[in-house]
Image 1 (tube, rainbow, N blue to C red):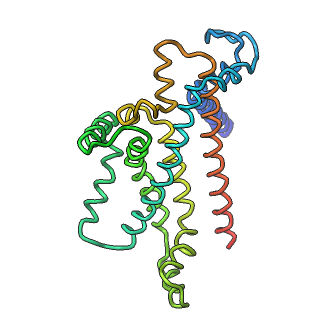
Image 2 (cartoon, rainbow, N blue to C red):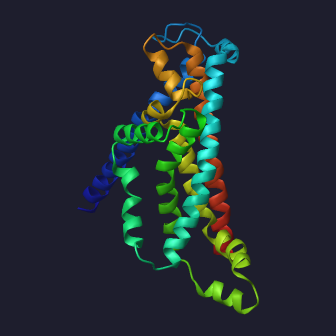
Image 3 (cartoon, rainbow, N blue to C red):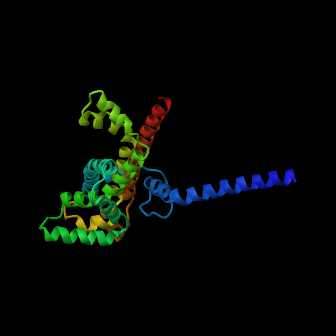
Length: 271
């Protein structure tokens, strides 16, 4: 009986390992294919014929692709910065204070998250047209901030759920003002939530297509939109090369965030 149980447990472990491996292969195989074909000698993305880096050189000479990539990083940076600032203040205010309409604001924060992106994109386009706002990088940043703020609020508020307000009271008893308490006590404690929310906002902004399609101007095309445009005529390996760079940038952001959070949590546990 014991041998049968042990053999069953081994089979379950092996089955679980195989299942996990298949899931990871399913998730990451498309990404690995993009990276692989960015080094392919052939222009036809069907069979890998040999290794080369020439497509990265061609990509550097493709001004349209680089311009779209620059727009993507610009929009991602500003939308992340604005979303992190507004989302953090909103999360702290909603956690700390009880005021009339708080539940309504809480409910409204979920709308950009649950509403279909195409509906949100059309709504933003209608609003910009009604307010006579010209479409460009500014409108694109404003649109991205709209759907990024809720994610920052949710992550920061989750961090605040275990926050001890007595720390702030003790600091104020020792002579610290509200500004000092906020920047020297509150912000360091909720910093992991802010960093996580900002990283999530950045990845969402860089990845967005639908909302960007409705709110971008002729000179503010982002890389996802440019890639979608090239899909219709056939993707060349230089697009794969730039996609690999985008993947590397995104992975670097996530890795940096995880490293910072790990170090902060380690310090908190040691203290």
